[in-house]
Length: 414
Image 1 (spheres, helix red, strand yellow):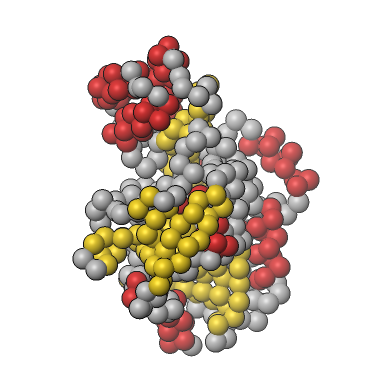
Image 2 (cartoon, rainbow, N blue to C red):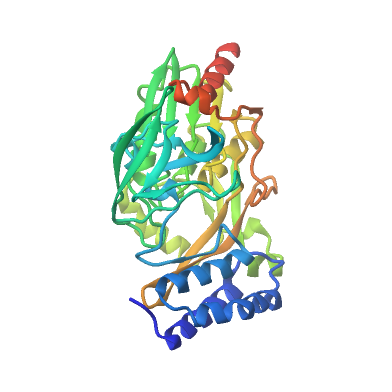
C-alpha cells in the first residue's frame, strides 16, 4: 500500500521523535540528528511509492547508525542470518566478486534447501547477485516467500538450482526463520555443541535442552567446543550457557539506557537476574519483578563442574553477534575458554521496536551492554585468542579449517 504525503509526514515526525527520545548513546547530539532529518526530508516526504519511501528512510537512519536503526514492514527485506539462517563471505572468483555461503545453520531455510557451506550464490529470484565491493553488506531476503536461487558448487564447479522457503516471522519486532537452535555430537572424543540462536525471549526451552545435554551425554566429556559462528543472538537464554562454563556465581554485565547514563546511576542498584526459568509457571513472577525495568544486572547460576578443567574452546566469526557476543565476552574476560576464529563485529545493544502506524515499526537501540568488568564492545567487537580466518578453499573441498583448529587446540591441552 502506497502512502499519502500526509502519512509520510506523520511517519517521519514519529521517527524523528522516537530516535530523539530513546537512542541509547549518551553522546547523542539531538541537533545533529535534526539536521540529518531535514536533509533527508524531501526524499522521504516526496517519495513516489512505498519502496522509495522505505529506501529514503533507511538512508536517513544509516547516516546516524547504519546497523542498529531500522524501519520494518511486512515487505522489508531481512538480513540473511535471520531470513534464510545463513551468512555470506565476499570472495574473488575468476576475476570477479561473488557471495559465498559461509555459515549454513542447522535446520534453517538454506540448509533445508540443500545449500552447502562454500556454495557460491549466482542468482536469487532470477536476479544476478554480485557484491558491489569486498566490504558490501550481505544481501537481504524477503520473509514469507519462496525464492529460487542458483549456486555454483565444488571444484570443478557445477550449477545447482535450489529454492529458499522463508517463513512468516513469529516475532514482528525481530523477524527470523526458525531453525534448530541446539545441535550436538562427539568428534574424536570431544563434545561439540553448536548454538545457532538463543531462541525465545526468556529461553526456557533452550535452558532445558542445555540441562539435558550437560547432565547427560556431555557429563563425562573432558573437552568441549562451543560453536557460535553465524549466531545472530536472541534472548536471555545465553545466561544458562554461561552458567555451565563456571561453578561460581559470577556477575556477567548489565544494560544501561541513555537516561541512566546521563544521571550517573550506579549499576549495583539494578535488579538482579540470576536464573533462566525452566518452567513457564515462573514467567508471571519474572514479569512482576522486572516490569518497567529497562536495566538489569545478570549473574550466572554456577552450574558448571570441574569436568572440563578449562578445556573449552568457543568458535566465533564476523557473523557472531548480540547475545552470542555477550557469552564470548564473559568467557574471555573470566578466562573460562579459548576463543578461536575471526573477530566479531561488536553489535551488542538492546533494541526495541515501536509501532509507527500504517504497517510500520521502528527498531531503535535503547540500551548499551556493559560487562561486569566495565567493557563495552559495541562497534569494537571481540578479538579471538587464536585468529583463524575462514577458508573458502577448504570449504569447497568439504573441510572446516576453523573447527579443525579448535580440535587441535583442545587435543594439545590434555
